[in-house]
Image (cartoon, rainbow, N blue to C red; front, top):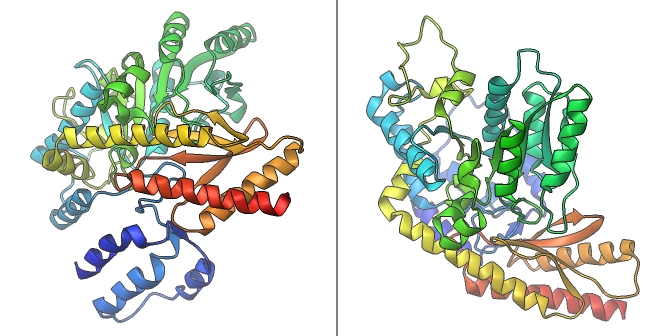
Length: 455
C-alpha cells in the first residue's frame, strides 16, 4: 500500500508517456521460470520503479490519447476482493448471490440504454469481444447455417474490431462493406441503402448494419434514428458500437446526441472507458436477451443444471466464456460506493473541457478543426497556406511529437481523407481544466518552434 500511495500521489507529476529505453528494460526482464521465490519488496521495486514507468501512462491526467480509461481505485479494491474469494460465476447455481450482483449491473446498463425488460447482456474483457458476440448473435438470428453470403455494412471510420469480429465469426473480409462517410465522418443511410440493394440483386444476404456512437478517430456519432429506420425496413440487425460514447447517456447532452440508441438490436459499451474502470471491462447489451442466449448456449454433462430464462442467468450460456473472472464486482462496487451522480458530474466535466479546448484552438491562426467535439473527442491540424499536403502532414506529425516530448500530456494522431490530424480525447476522471490548459500551452509552444524554424 505504500507503493500504491506513492504512485497515486505522484501521478500528476509523472510523464504522460515515457517509452524511451523501454525496449531495453523489457529485454532485461526476460528470464527462465524461477525455482526459488524472491522477496516481495524486491519484486515491488521491479514493478513500480522499472517496469511500470516505461509505458504510456494511461492513468495520468495528461493522457489525452486514444480513448483514456483512468482506473478508479474502487475497482481495484473490487478486483482484490474478487480474487480473494475466487468464486465461479459462469453458472448461476455455483454462486447465485454473486451472479445476481453482476446481473444487477447489466440490468442497470440496459435501463440506461433505454432497453425494455426483455433485454440482457454480458460483461466482457472489452469492446472487441462485445462486437464479436453481437455479430455472432446477429448471424445466428438472421442467417442460415451456410452463412457465407451474409454481408454487413459499416463506415470507413468504424472501429477495426468490427471487421476483425466479422472474420472471427466466419465471414470473408470482403463481406464487410466499408462505406465512405459524410462531411461529419458519419455513415450515410442513403449509401447503405444503395449498397444493400446492389448486394441483394447480386444474390447476397445483407443481415447487419454496425453504427458508431463515438468513433475512435473523430468521435463521430452516426445518425442512429435514420439507420434504425433503414434496418427495420430491410429486416437487418442494427448493432451500435458505443464503446467510447455510450456512457454519456448518463448526461442530458449525451442522451440528446445518442438519441435512437434505444432502438438498436445490440449495443457495445466499455465501462473501462466512460465509467473509468480498469482495462478489461467491456459490455454487450442485446434488446432480446433470449437471442443472446440462443446464440451462445451449449451444454455438457459435467456442468450443473442450467437455468431456464434470464431471471437466473448462466453467463456461460450468454457468452463464449466458460471460465472467467468475477468481473461484475468491479462495476457493482464503484457504482454502489459513489452512486451514478458522481459519474454523471464527471462526464459532464469532460464534455465541457473538450468544447472549451476546441473553441480555444479554433481561434489560432491557420488552425483547422476537422472534427468538432460531438462528445469529448475532437480532431484538428495546422494548415498553413502555400504548402503541399505531404509537407503539411510532415509538419503536423512533428507538431505532435514535439508536444508529447514535453511529457505533460500525451496526444495521438490519425489520418482523415489523407490528412494527418491530431486528436484530443478527454475522458480520464483525473483530467481537469488545468491539465487541458497545459495541453494548449504545450501545443502552442511546440507550434511556435516549428514556425520559427520554417519561416
